[in-house]
Image 1 (tube, helix red, strand yellow):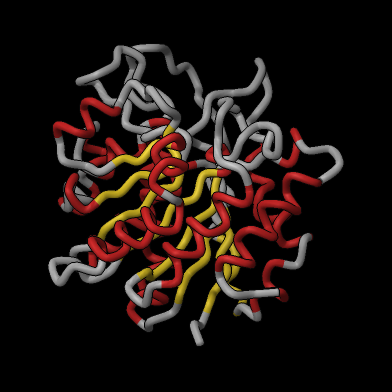
Image 2 (spheres, rainbow, N blue to C red; image 1 turned 90 degrees about the horizontal axis):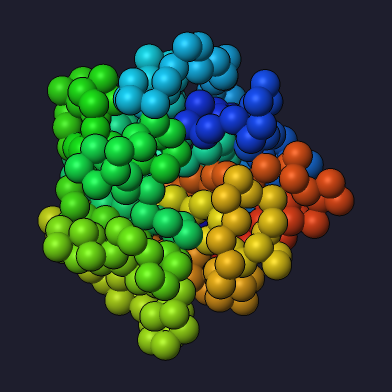
Length: 298
């Protein structure tokens, strides 16, 4: 039996404001999933909260690089410091975000321990960087680029460990068909499977094949990153950037289950769900059910 430890990482530092003067509500994700009984249903241990810095972009303007960069760097180290002892002890951290930039904390923690891979289940690759865009700024859309060494030094080279992930050690699932990053990822030999391909090839079979490649002796293990926007907006409208033609619950469930079932999977984070956009709580309940089922809870 896995020793699951639930740890809250309620950072929204990587997202743009949803409206002038407002802050992204995804920092409430952990509270919503806890309200749905995720700790009890998984029989998990309590890992506490890694308190995030205040969301404040100050006088940031386009062209200034990543906003909240100093706060993001400090939080990435803080989260990595908390995850490190759990990973070294063989615990399975379940990190409740937060926006996608929290994945940097896991990647840094794992790089400190060895060579690890990443299976990202996300509607987009989050691979924006200065080499392919003039609009770098929001780390939640750039964390994979940063983690693979494409980013400003104060985020991409913490502790002198750039890159935290190698391109060839990343697997992507659930990108929308026609995603603009697909050609670049192919050139880097980073496997990326779109929604259409998952349906054509079979969700479970595709996931099993990816897991086999991540179980390679070259890797010490791998982490799973789940962004709620991989789901279709018909069932998950409570995200900052809902994209049509996403996965349905009956597809995400088997995919996530296959990815986390391997003994080489060392942890999972959940991001982007925004309770402010889910007044009746149905999307949050669905997300909780999917995570609990994947990890063998009730």
